[in-house]
Image 1 (cartoon, rainbow, N blue to C red):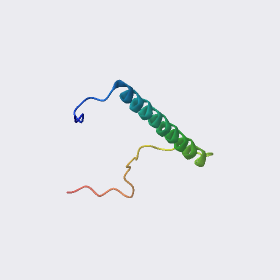
Image 2 (cartoon, helix red, strand yellow):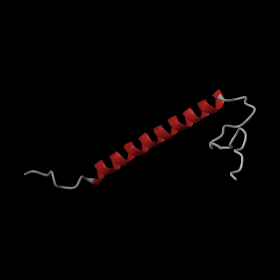
Image 3 (cartoon, one colour):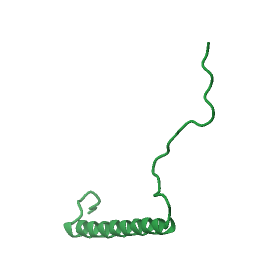
Image 4 (tube, rainbow, N blue to C red):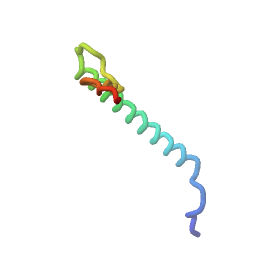
Length: 66
């Protein structure tokens, strides 16, 4: 008989869940390490890292139209 359509036993499902959780923990750990390294590379700094960009016009203003 062919059991392709049969659901997986709970034992296999639990094993995949554990593997996925371990992988997620590893990825989170790697991300935390990268963030920490980025902070170390920018320290000491006079200003904190900006996450936004401001657009302030520079130069002389255009004369008003008549």
